[in-house]
Image 1 (tube, each protein chain N blue to C red):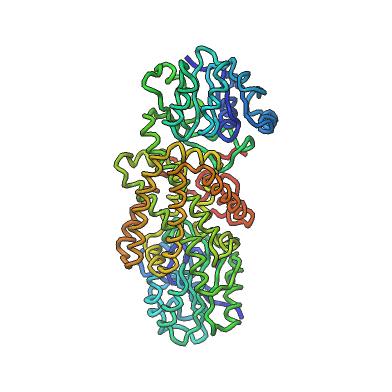
Image 2 (cartoon, chains in turn cyan, purple):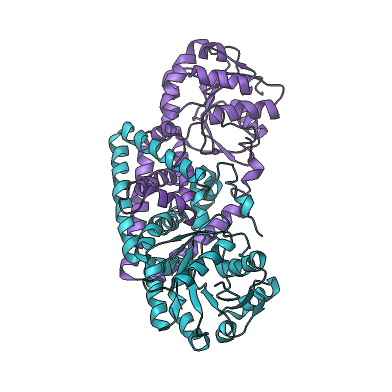
Length: 304
Length: 304
């Protein structure tokens, strides 16, 4: 089986990119879409994010054999409830949310009897809204699919093939393990970036203009992800609370240890810690998830 | 006055970039250099980082009217002592170190009676060694000069013009204020990046291969600066201890507050914090210290 008509609910960075990617890489597939915000719908129509932008969520999903919910995690349940009456009997409902146990529960409750297969393409930029998406966002990025225990293997295979067609590499994973892995690779980094940018903003002895001027010393690397969509990230932290708090606890312990090394002047401990982190950077470059070039190779993925 | 012969002690990323930049933007100025490591000297000669690489520090500085020390902060005192016997009477000695009160003290002690004017070009990459430097590293970056109270204004002006010729924007600042500003814009970000990369490496429930695969979710942004030179950064933290510990304390308080918001489910507090950090990102892009393009505009500064 493969999908012939895909409905995208929510036309921001992820939804828009999915719509553009389907049109580019799966030209025979029909795309429809809807967004709660009328201005976003108008802009999505202008940019052609999907073939047809509908004025109601129900109309958007009526003919779809695959529906992908691309709304903040906290809005998944309401979005699912809105489309429920209009879904085809053979539809697969999926999503792109960043925490999977919470989403799986919300969709199962809102869509009893419907085939729900949650997924999470690990891709994004710090931009958001209907102007942010581009067709190549998923190239060489991983898409984690977290099928429930009773999922139909043929539907899981079809969803995997769908994401592979859009350029992603697919991995199947238990939802609980997903939430732990992403807590460290994505949620904790965002929380820390949001914190340090706020800390810098609050200093009384240093002006904001100084922070901005001298940001090339390292600070600017944090500001990129601290510019990510506030609603999306509020929902991520609230919906993956346990794993985030666990990672935060470990991070704080490690930071306290380094703090102590600085206070007592233990240069060897600092040197050892700073040496081993280099090897991880090398592995990330070798795996193709970042690039040693000064532009990080991001120009390869530039869309707009 | 302007400098006619520049000696560079230490031929890594900063020293090599300075040598290449002088040859590109000040073609009438003679450049000499030395590095403690014979292999670095050989590679510096091959790459032509300076006109002449000498086999002793004394020979490298003998004819120079400007000496720039480009060694880790903890090695500044020893490097200054090594060149002291061979310095010209009218020489200006400067440096590129990341903490300025410590360096000012070390150089004043090692070079009594010599004109010392510390400086810090806020520029760099995560690479190090004689292959890392490139001539355009300082373009549009700030160079902070921290003249001692008794500095000769003509010499300060000459050093300012030197860095401006290499493409930098120059700011004069008190050394103590420099150390506070850089603690937040550079030292704290590096410490946090080193910490989180180490935390991720230590998890027992998540494999290192998973951390690497899904790093595009945010983690990879931290690994770039966590790959920076371990010796340099060990010295920075030990030499700017007070300001770093002060910033760390503030950061930890802010992180604890966000942690509490997550624990009690205060979505509004999270949303408010995540919204205000967006504005800072915008300011950094407007000031030209980063770029909204997917490659951050780093391709403009690519050297090798």
